[in-house]
Length: 353
Image (cartoon, rainbow, N blue to C red; front, side, top):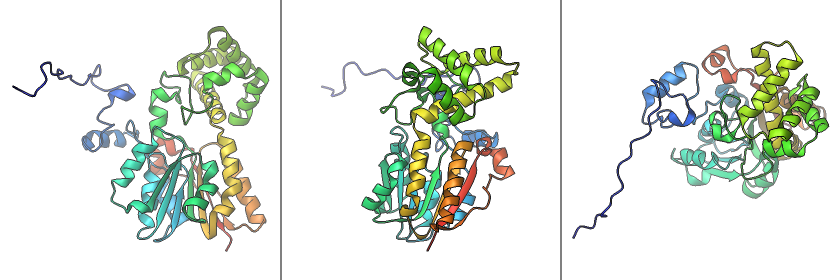
């Protein structure tokens, strides 16, 4: 008798996308497997785009230069993401060094850890934890032990988060109205809209995104949500577009900017991004050894203001011996090859000896 099953499962071909080119995130199977389709991925990169499911680390050379990681040192990556910066830091502190890497995203973190461990570095040289970087001081006390020589925080969203419609981060794709870094914790944007009042929503649109139409937009959004319970990104985007068109004489591009600002403000709120950053900035001096270096990459004026103020206050208090006089920006060439690097601002500080 044969041991094979009597009713073997039939072979199923991969669903093909319509037309010549893939349009949707999950159709871009070649971009999700760069090791199998390097030529296809190269074409995407040459076009100034980011392959689906991946992320292009921003200002890598500048970050390595200001942090100057050395063999044997302890480095920290507060926002592991796709692992592009982490890979460079981990390599630079070998032999004998360690990288402590954290990220709040339970979906992407295991994938990134697996990629880093496949690079062949000693297992003990990489410590990965799923957590918000607001708790980094406690983790360092437990794992380092003590303090770090090098610390990086890239505050931007990763491309694989932005481009995945199921995460609900982007206005470009229809997806659930979520925007949480950790979908298993806290309120989604839809949940927030069910609980917040117009005054509070207006306030967070001003504080988180400098939105000039904050008050009337807050009212319009909550009226629409009460009437039909907004559940997707496109539903919310359409409400914002219609309201902005009635309230102003803006053109379509300017209205799209309004949509992006509202999405940004809501994402910052549901993830408490400013609160986590404020906590990190307060902890930084105790996280760094004398002479330790910190670099923070921000993409939003509210983030950059906080970093600039904290570094300046730390310098005046004698906690830092040097800080960046001006923020560093991505080179014109990098901005051309990766447009998502254009708003990036890099600031650094050196702990007093």
